[in-house]
Length: 247
Image 1 (tube, helix red, strand yellow):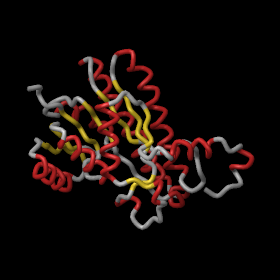
Image 2 (cartoon, one colour):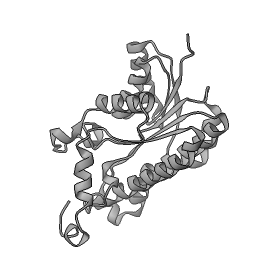
Image 3 (cartoon, rainbow, N blue to C red):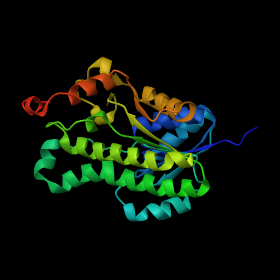
Image 4 (cartoon, rainbow, N blue to C red):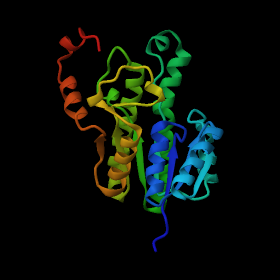
């Protein structure tokens, strides 16, 4: 029997994180949940263990405490085979326009922290010679819009980082995958009116991540494929017309 593989799920208290970790555990993987809120992560870990019988451990990680990333990697009980980072902060665009602290929170949570963390894992994976890195970005990063350009800019940066990292690591045989879920029915979007055809469920995202990362060679996935032509259409609008729209 092959030894079980290990997943590190960064963002272990989020709806998408829990659903993704559960899908890996159901496939026989050991799971490491990394999160700032350890109590909530332990609740998710207990639920996943009860449902699957998998080994699930919890590890404290604050994505904004970038100086602690090195020690975080050093103290993991095992270097994971796959790292999935689902960390995100939608934030408040209007608040961020006047409050630089809030703007910094959105930018650092969605771009700086995840990029620096996956960059460190990339170096460890290169030294080992294997590994898969998965970053959950957003369709919001495909083109800046007035209603959420702080979040969109951070996700655009993360998407570009993942693309560059993939270009660098592919010749070494390492995987880097970018996931763009679009709308997802989670705590983060609670209260928002979401179009059903464009809105995924957390379990749908988790299944898509596992399938694409572990059973295919795809590099960039839109969880709901309809988002690809939608964003291509939005991206093709000339700027002189686009700037008049209220999106």
